[in-house]
Amino acid sequence: MDLTFTPEQTAFRDELRAWLAENPPEAKPTSGDEHDEFVWRRDWQRRLYDGGWAAPSWPTEYGGRGVKPVESAIYFEEIGRARVPFSANTLGLLLGGPTLMVWGTDEQKERYLPPILSAEEIWCQGFSEPDAGSDLAALKTRAVKDGDEWVVTGQKVWTSGAQFAKWCMLVARTDADVPKHKGLTYFLMDMEQDAVQVRPLRQITGEAEFNELFIEEARVPDANVVGGVGNGWKVALTTLMNERAGLGFALQIRLRQLLDDTIQTAAERGLLEDPLYGDALAELHIRCETLRLLAWKGLTDAERYGQPGPEGSLVKWLWSDTNQRLTELAVDIVGPEALTAGTDWSYEFLRARGNTIEGGTTEVLKNIVAERVLGLPRLKAAA
Ligand SMILES: Cc1cc2nc3c(=O)[nH]c(=O)nc-3n(C[C@H](O)[C@H](O)[C@H](O)COP(=O)(O)OP(=O)(O)OC[C@H]3O[C@@H](n4cnc5c(N)ncnc54)[C@H](O)[C@@H]3O)c2cc1C
Image (cartoon, rainbow, N blue to C red; front, side):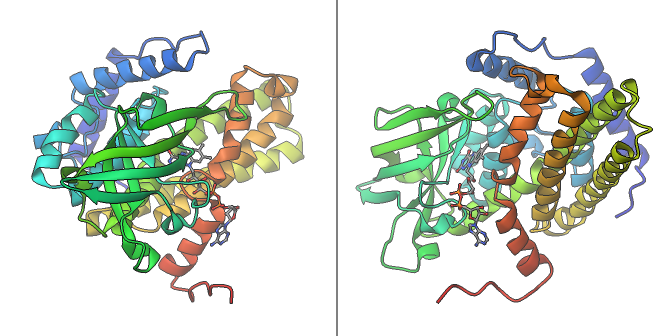
């Protein structure tokens, strides 16, 4: 991968930078209310949408700019650099939309993609269950055909943003008599029905970002099957690969900014001369640079195969590990403020704990890197 930008790529970056400078988001609400924050992020996405910047990598017919992976990476780097909020519909933009583009019918693309982009319809991801997280294919939520509809019953958990979502990317079991990976189907389930109950789960940060879903005979039309009955495992893998790769660029820039803030605080407190802190900060700097280069390297695959490959797992693993190390060191550097509820530093410290679990645990990502990137022998199931 050649990291020198072409004149067109530089022009793209400059145009976006100028737009972001002229169109800053509103100030973040101070109420601490999650709904207020959601509205703030939704308004920001609408502003991006109006400016044609909600998802430049999407094809022009669906409201994007049809840009190539390099421009898309530039986009995420600039979004991170500008310190703007994540779009309210991040799961729709980065996971749902790209999955539909690969597996959806023309009717599904036409119906669902535009409101994802404009934040009119928010999406959530109903994969994990109480007994099926890492081993997603063990999920028990079942869908039974009834005429031209499916009747869905089961429980999902850790469903981020479900309280704001109109559509759920739901994986359910449609055939219990075949090997577990083969009996799954991927649905788009309407969240606005009484059969779907959303109950918030409060996290260590104090916010309820994710939820439990209780589904009792919810109805999903046959037209909302994505990628064919029994093909849900493959469709879900497309979603997961986009999850691990898509955020990589924005996250590594945020990490860099947090590191810069930590270094500045260390300098203000005269800690940079202390070799203990100097060494730790230098190592984090090297990790940030490694991550940046790995994220760019991943583009080669995206360009070659048209979708992200398993290497995204490496970026996600290294990012989460580095973010946890950094936020732990920041506590030592910042002092008691970083352990005081309600401060930005304490939020960063506490929120980082979930990084090694969400979007695939570190242990599972290591298995993927070992088997699918390095080609090592597959893990043997316990006898
Ligand atoms: C902040 C946050 C947001 C989330 N949002 C969503 C969401 O929107 N939608 C959704 O569907 N899910 C979501 N999740 C759930 C997340 O995907 C799961 O928590 C994750 O996949 C792990 O599943 P689990 O919690 O069931 O743990 P388990 O799978 O039970 O794992 C328990 C432990 O065993 C280890 N382990 C499991 N299998 C192996 C193996 N084969 N080899 C080695 N070690 C193994 C794991 O690494 C872990 O340490 C979210 C989680 C978090 C923390």
